[in-house]
Length: 180
Ligand SMILES: CC(C)(COP(=O)(O)OP(=O)(O)OC[C@H]1O[C@@H](n2cnc3c(N)ncnc32)[C@H](O)[C@@H]1OP(=O)(O)O)[C@@H](O)C(=O)NCCC(=O)NCCS
Image (cartoon, rainbow, N blue to C red):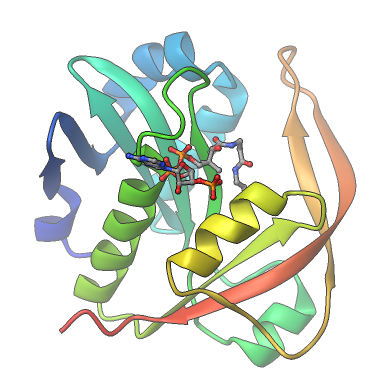
């Protein structure tokens, strides 16, 4: 469980501020990034301690987000090989703001946040065709695990509130959290 002190943590890097989202942020999040049902679902999960939604802001506008999955992983292989290891999921930066290190800052803040919460390792899944994201993670110290590719299920939240489950083959990458 993330301590209340961490929940209020705001990280400023240049003109970007990164902090945990709360319900009051929903209208701005949806305006900037769409995906209302996704963000509602994640804010609900956060409220019961299953995860943390971090948002990068420039002025009063969200420019990116990442969700830290703290609950047990849905995939059996992840639970078996990486028990109790949090997952970095749904990293995204709004189009038009990419390639300015916002993604890098979100990842670094996520790592710092998890490290302060006591975690020693972090993991994530990258779709096989997402070479740009794989390259970014590799540059930031993430290495592919030795257990091969993993069949995961991507949950798509449609505008009408329905969900679609879509199979997605991923590389799993991990990094030790050794920020001290
Ligand atoms: C993946 C994603 C989050 C990266 O966000 P970003 O803010 O563009 O990331 P960064 O700016 O930190 O780094 C990305 C690239 O910009 C380059 N870059 C960043 N700042 C730079 C600078 N000041 N000067 C030159 N190059 C720079 C990085 O080296 C990297 O280049 P490369 O891909 O050509 O090797 C973003 O592209 C995105 O939202 N993609 C769609 C969703 C997605 O695929 N998410 C990942 C799911 S696993």
